[in-house]
Length: 102
Picture 1 (cartoon, rainbow, N blue to C red):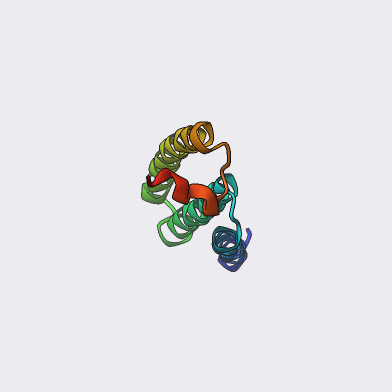
Picture 2: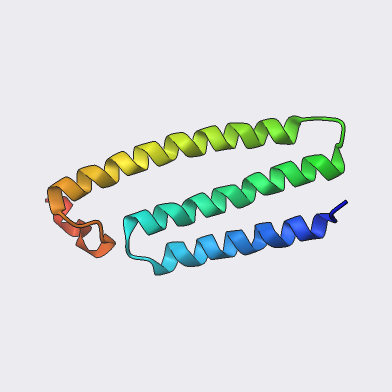
């Protein structure tokens, strides 16, 4: 059996990579991928804490499935917005989005 600390280390690394990617990238798709990394690290925590704290119950797994569904819907909406921005501006860099204001 793998200890809980290993799962938490992987989850922490994923969270910090997502935070770093979100703050350093200027491309909207790269920022979306970083947000997805952060959400996946939270999903890992839900599943791990459920497995180790309440081994016979499935609440953590249900929260994980619900979060994955919400994440998929959020990704679909975000990609639709990015496509609309690309059609209007012909660029998906964050610094060029000021053109969309006016």
